[in-house]
Length: 286
Image (cartoon, rainbow, N blue to C red; front, top):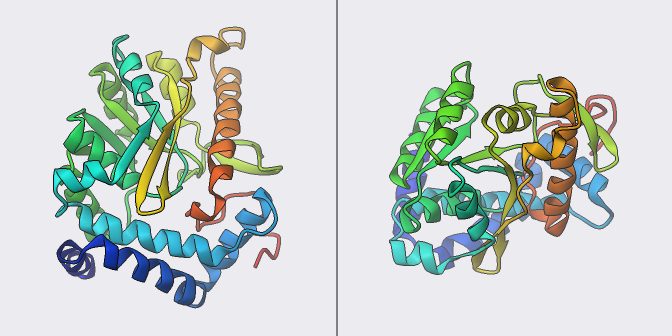
């Protein structure tokens, strides 16, 4: 299996070698190997602002992969030294109230490293909701990797909501990548000045469990990784909205505004390679 072979190689090589090679290869070769994805990503970046280039996003994406490949073989010392947290106390403050925080993240930087730090260094219970990738052995590899890092994976299927609610009630840290609507059932909102469909799940989970959403991003920071945890968005802040769809939509709009701020800190680390805006299939964005 290619993933297992790549992981075995990356576990044996130092990050000081694999990271620069991956970043260079992603920038130099990625736009040709992933031409469609590069064009889509460039369209996303154009919405953020001028002067951002998809090849750097592909370089960042390549770094994400080699770091993920090598994480399982990294010592606790390496994981701890390579990572910094700003706002971790917000996670623990929420857990102290009796619910697990819902960390909502964009596809930015190296979120797997944050999961490794939480599971291996903080010894905190972590549950991550993940898209069921195809082929199945790719998804199985991710489950195995994250389990090795101390993270329980919940597949994004019909049982995901109940499993995630249970995790929140156990005061576990729940991680949700929330800048793309995989299921296609979310809300249409303004996202960087254009209409996009984003997932409804975070808002529904927050409302049903009374747990707050914590906008979070993990950035590559030189040879380090920096995690920023934002102020919690408590569902009680939206009590003036009618229960149900209107409240969920209000929470989602607030969340998307926070995700925009996080993405805009480092747009060229944004790894959103698939169509996401309603106009993506109607506009030439290459």
